[in-house]
Image (cartoon, rainbow, N blue to C red; front, side):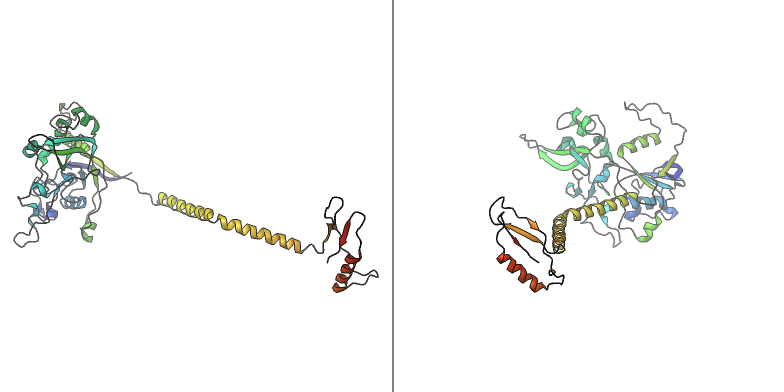
Length: 386
């Protein structure tokens, strides 16, 4: 592998822009020195940013304009939620609308996670009572909808995690089945059938996989060319361990916090990019396989034609051989012993005096001989043919 960034210091984004999306909203411009509200220097730094609220490439562009040498984007529950902003309007006639500042969103404006893409109920399911949902969870906070305080109730393997406490089966089922130890509210609700008609909200185990940092098609050509720093993605679990390490907290399995063994020791990162071969061998193999399959299919489908052509060739060969034998003598059984056909050598086309006989004379002679020749003792009659 080749180095993409060596000796980088991990850092967090500006305090007023935790998702590093303010520039994409039009709230600030990081290309100027006044854009960084904290006045923090990001020289030789790798900014650790949660996923969500704007595209990966927008985050990388803002990080580069802040002076960072790399960006690390990590998974988050908040990135699976957003708000429907289609009914937002422009403020004061500016190019920015009120989608990221308005405070009148309702639960009906929430765009919920997608089944089998963001979560899987087969790996853990819970039903959270509506009163608990309303008192502790918030999904209508601007600009992204999801309130980061929700993490306190949706992460972990203790009863602080609502999915553990209100698991559909029992507590141990969710803990053992959900590897990420995180859950997402799906936006679906059910009635428990009680007399009070209590509503419960469904929550399911969240996926936590590494993903591809796809391109933002809304960027201009110049903005795309501007992004040159390396960007990597890490999962929610990896990010939690990394943030604990940055905060000087040892992540032990027992969750007791452990001893602080990192005081005074700075964290230095080295980022590496995977080698890219000059020749795409897999493409060559796929091409060769495609050519072979096409040849095999054509060969099998033409089997009837090959059989027919072979029969024609054999027939032509036999006809050619039969035409080159010359005159053939055949005897036909007229009864008697055996009744077999016996081949006889053809008569000489020459006269007895050695002079050649014409073809018409030969036919006449043959006919006369045939008519006058009596059957032999064996019952056979000899017929001469040219």
